[in-house]
Length: 236
Length: 105
View 1: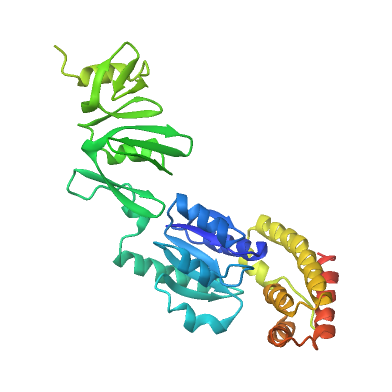
View 2 (view 1 turned 120 degrees about the vertical axis):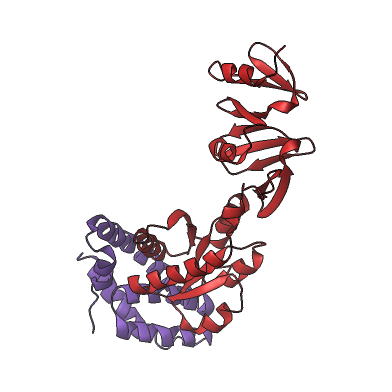
């Protein structure tokens, strides 16, 4: 279960991080000292859970919750007991931890989150996962899940921490890895021909010695991947 | 006056001495900044901003096991939100106690 921590107090973030280390299923992806940085992060990447402080200068935890289009589960952390009733008016908020948080209470909270999540699939579970029909893939863009038909994908290019998915209609930049998306693509259509490229080889227009042409894009073939590409082609 | 302690931090740390050292370092760095900000806002009579920083300091009081001081901070924060800073001298003593303690650990 991936999570982030948003709290303007460094000591509070350190405590939640330490508590997370006691729960093997929890993976703290990042922490933020203000809500705006948290929002920027969530525009690029999904997580399963947010530990969120209510009292932050300028932008409260409740403001933050209302800003998110498709929020993950949220556990509020606060020094104030008076917000509990208001907290539960927001659907994503599943628990409310009063600081200082005890390890026992923290463990109960995570158990509660896990129970809820078992009943409904998380966003990150849905991200990059086929529908089961076997013809399409969902990618997460700005917290929207966009459906792409496998047949519309031309190729995918690795760009640092991101991948660019080039389709017939549009290009999409997704915070993900080539390795991860490769696992979701049908082998009969897609092939990695370079450490930075996976192509839909039904879209190849022609092949030269060390490159393929897909629409107007020239894509390099690495020496090590060339034999597999040649094997897969219907050569005359 | 009750004295700060590290019971909560030790409970969290368990055998993790690295966390304990790291956390104390965070306290030593963050508390003086918050105290400075508190003093600045109080001097400027910005009671809402002062209440916000008292709220943040409340957590430090809890972390350091200062239960009476925490209750004082709760009342003080409520007073400040109404524009009343009459508990400022008592709260200043709490801050001073923490400052002295942090210099000893």
